[in-house]
Length: 112
Image (tube, rainbow, N blue to C red; front, side):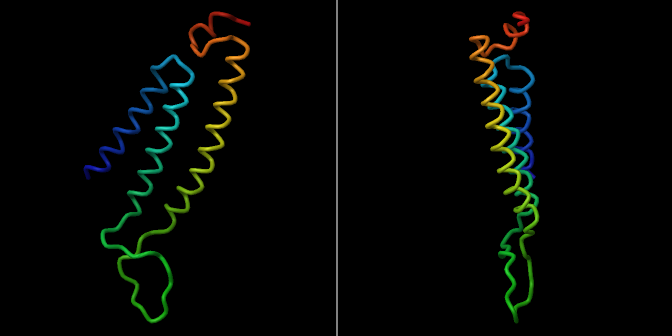
């Protein structure tokens, strides 16, 4: 139960960075932290103590097998998270080229 709570704390730290920080780079890092917290939570759901890999073996009884579906979801989520991060970094670079700042309060004031 403690690891789920720590995973939730990690998600809250990322959410705090997204909502309260004014620097675009810190906001991007906050989104990355949130993505990794969700991935960690999915892996923790699938974990079984002394579980074996989900590989079919003829003649063996299936006992305490790890669920492979969250593992596949996390692999997909990692790829999607990488694409989202690349998009956010690309947008941050274009905003910096235009406004010469990463501060979103100054960008809102420029109106250009």
